Image (cartoon, rainbow, N blue to C red):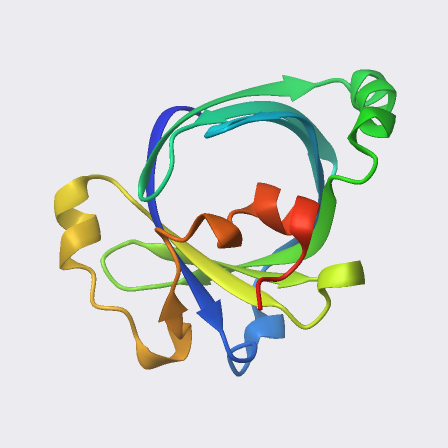
Length: 156
């Protein structure tokens, strides 16, 4: 994936009922470099590995992602020590051809459940009426960004 992403993020009180019925895969990601609203990370998602650069905050961010060979991922992974998250991502269909990506965190963040919805444009993001099960929106709160969770843990 390359270009801009427009998404909204929510913290759930608990996983939605029937979540395990939806497709999922494990994700391990670690941060190589963090500088304000710019991050460079490596991620293993299922059988694939990626190097991703993201810039910006809030709802709209620039993202450039490159697929990595497993050997290169393995060489970079140790450089992320102390700046990692592990989660299982479930993909749940929503209305209007949207999908909820529901992340159930593990290890130090066990018990945390977050959902993101990516939109094709700002109009769709503004028009989105979130179902009650999505919980509290945290799109504009930097404490809930994955990089902050990797560095500081779950916000109080």
